[in-house]
Image (cartoon, rainbow, N blue to C red; front, side, top):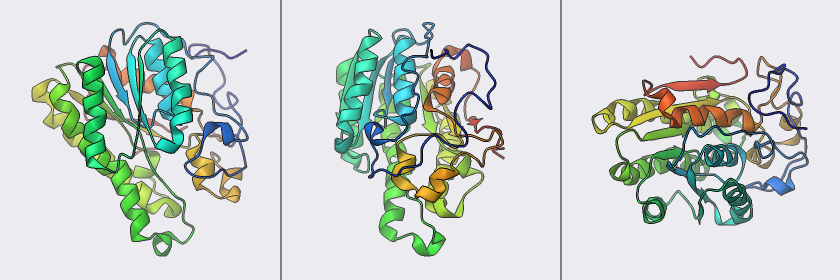
Length: 298
């Protein structure tokens, strides 16, 4: 039986080490194709009403961290709009099912966030459905491991990484802020890679460092509107993006680099997003919460 997020456990033995699977899948990666499915908190996350009535947008909510956050938000009382690529609509509908099962409204919007107009359409849809936005979670991301380091990264790949990871955040915030009342929050997904970059993820790491910097600036810039902005910086997390973008040899050791000796499951990240979305974090802005299994984010 799954234990909820409040049950005390040995963190080094809570999930498989170092990772959870060893078979690659075709990009962009679908949960059903993974040899070992991640834990998104479907059977374990227990809500306590901390986000009752909030209207939220989560990009990349089809799977991985995004799905775990959507499930947690819904069980905390929030309505949820999730975005996904068109090829990931099946996973998005599964996430939406869990949101509806929690008694909340679920909206799915497929499309490519590399397009500025689509980012505006995502926010327009949220405003039509909800009236306003209380929480924007910019979580969708792209990476592709390259053993060649600098020589292996093409301009096309670099552009895709930056457009997905940092341009989309900029466009979404520009569109959403006018519809966010005082007390609203922006939460970004950065990474331990922003602080400890791996050569095989050089472009991804650079984009995550940019997210950290932009989030810190946003947190100060938006204070006069009563809007906070903070970031969650995960370490290795077992999501479909990992077997879709890494080779089998890297999958075998995925998570071993963390001092805890294992990768996180998405369900272990969700409570931090809930905290930043809730009034409990009211005196926090421009901060980065490291959820890295012990790796420093300095």
